[in-house]
Length: 88
Image: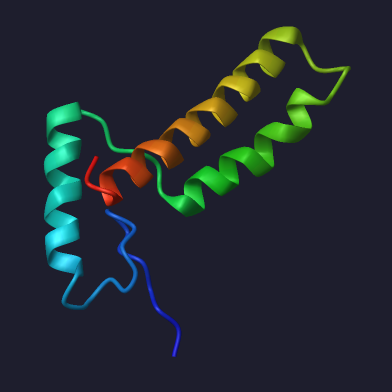
């Protein structure tokens, strides 16, 4: 049986004894920051779509910069999610 992550807070399993507390901490952090980090799935999708653009010499510089910024945002969101999970 595979575990399913919560679509909002990313906690695995989405149902279980630890989920409610984690979910509430995540929601509280997002309210305070006024920012919700992208989910794991979304971050991976952004990186998968952006890396080819960054490395495409034929792409416009502005598009390459936008793609690089999207990757940096995905890394930032991963770091923020880890900080929230770690109660930092």
